[in-house]
Length: 517
Ligand code: NAD
Image 1: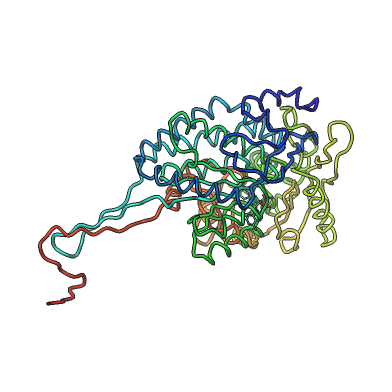
Image 2: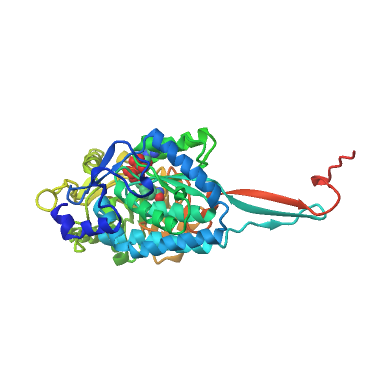
């Protein structure tokens, strides 16, 4: 255990999460099927080894599928409100373990401790939501055109839901899916990111305990570990009717095709390229807070991170000066230390992508306003700490069109009406989150109208970053079109059935068709 890990209580956190024995690659909880080569998890905070987790071989995967399939036959018979009770207990366990789990998220992924706690809070919130939902899996009733008939729709569980998640939300995305899927009567098989495997085992340990305490089959929640090859076992598997995949657009295109080829369902939550429009009527102070948090929070590694600031030319210099001034006050360093604003990138590959993007932006004609760079020396030994950068750029630059998962903010001007800004904001392939800063009601409503933002999330006087669990979360275009979390997102985890019941002694056909025998 490194000095930093000891100083910030990581050893205690691992112990509370039941992870203290997995340093040699032995796995715990329901993960005991994994017998393949171990993945070592190194912290981007200080480069130290946190632990090793064994990967899932094809033979291990078959055992997992058998366990999950058997568990489903039991779980689907449990009444939905009783399934909700299990999710309630899971939420309670998360409340007890919020601090150690938040700390592990921070140490393994590199986001601030506050954000790590926030991520666990999202898990708790979705559990609360799912508990209420377990009594509200409503279908519609409709009037039959035939006398003495009744028609209604009901929702049944799908079966095994496969979850593939990204490194940047190593625990919350799993809970967004599982809390809903479980109350819907599904069982879940999760492949966390190979970059955050310890978070996966920690979550599995927590739910495994709840299931054990309730004498429920372990297979209701299964964990498989490894890289894309393990993910592909699920995407190609007919026994998995729904694959919920969160990650890059590149990954989503491969997963979507594999699942579609077997006519399965996929729920895709992919990359964003999110912009804030700043109009002449914007509150500049609020704009600066929203834009800086959006661009540098989680070191620019949120799917909803602010990547572009589209500013009206009449206030461009004022906003530019205020933002660059705010950047000069940013403290970069250990994310477990609450005095720091910006932590590390996930690994040195991400650092290389950040450096390459800054070079490319300049090659395409971008002007650097706040220079980036990799930090070295004491406190930066992992090699993953970079300076948040700001570049003046054109929306048409190829590099601006891409999502670089790092703290690089592109500033660009618009002139004339808000429609010109909306055209720039929509002028990318991604469609996740968007925002407008304005006190002008007409501009705000035009931004929210059918001719406005084309994103799954459109905010007024709030930045692009983060979302509450109560709304459906997801994005359009190459972001994949999936919706998770609140509202009626639960419907994707169920199959819909239309039922018609005849309580007469006649057999009338629909549409007045006669068939006399
Ligand atoms: P990634 O695409 O590299 O990996 C994501 C997951 O997909 C990992 O578990 C990985 O092992 C798996 N995977 C990769 N290729 C696969 C394949 N061919 N078949 C099956 N599984 C495969 O993404 P990342 O670097 O971990 O995360 C960053 C990306 O995730 C960003 O683009 C970000 O915007 C996106 N993201 C989106 C959302 C959202 O809700 N829209 C949320 C978080 C992250």
